[in-house]
Image 1 (cartoon, rainbow, N blue to C red):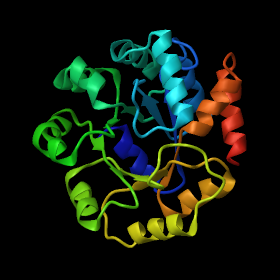
Image 2: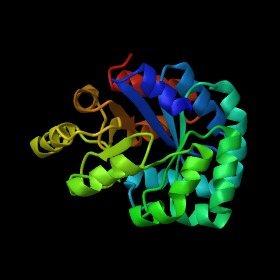
Image 3: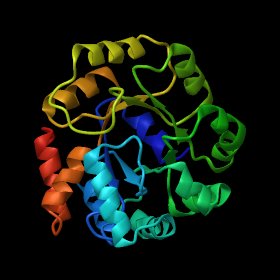
Length: 260
């Protein structure tokens, strides 16, 4: 049982997961960001591997990826940084989010081996087709006890959702809308109806809602309609305002969403 399973075993609701792009704002920010997020009570941390063409990400995270790549961040360096940072957050689930191209270049089984070594608890690969996951990746997930988290959107049909629920572990990442990442002031009636439709399905895995969470209202809607929320763009903006004070960036994030 990894840290992710332990988290869901002790906390079923109001889980807060925060995303940041490794290498932003600086090449050596990773460890301090993980330390500050964990010490200020964030339940789960999602670490983004910067990529030149992040198809699921909006302008804010795209910009952070560009800065990170220009700073010299890459997957090999990031995994080394996580190995050190894990000492500062021994019990917090760490999820590595990235696109297939850098992972394939690194080597897929080599990646699973290294993730196990450094303490990564799950992977999110937005451009991994489900069929390819079943044929080439699921066995590795089972071997290394590192699940690949699948995303669903309002357009994902119920049969596909049930297949994901049956064949993947960890949790289901509910993308709040059929769009890229970014902050929103409120969820629409259509989005709320989507959340409730998924809640009526007899799914065995926890669900976290991401994309568009930026204030107490959207956070509460996510908490009310799933096990928790994933926040990314808002935190990147906080980091951009406090490049030399990561603790202050985390505090601003938590204050903005009404946690502090």
